[in-house]
Image 1 (spheres, helix red, strand yellow):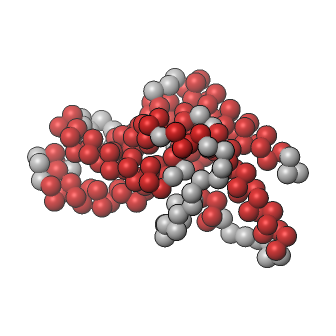
Image 2: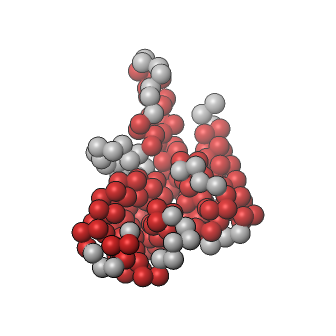
Length: 182
């Protein structure tokens, strides 16, 4: 880190290599679009490189970079109107399994259960697209990344109460979308 802050591009490249994959997965979960996630990650690393001198070390580098990436993903959503479409998101053949739902094991081998699982996955994808960017980011950070409320609130520029409300609204909307499948 010290060498990267001193301008050593090779040291910064090692930081990029160490953090690129988890940042892409985080940004993908927020944007639900591989191209937007890739752009967000590139923007995050660019901003991190330009802002290394301002990094004060109070938080871990990964936490600092995480916050930059979340903000970059939210900015990509604001720039791109595709997140408002009702259709399912474009799925990628990403070897990392960036789509969380696609990585879940299928306990029921019969075709009817598989079709039902696909229907649930598509419904969740559609509802995730309908969440506001702050609801989606808060939900992803809490339930997929396991971040504490205080860190999510800080990352999203909210107070803890607003953060809890965003997560609650997202959970309620997802639950309502799945209720009709019972």
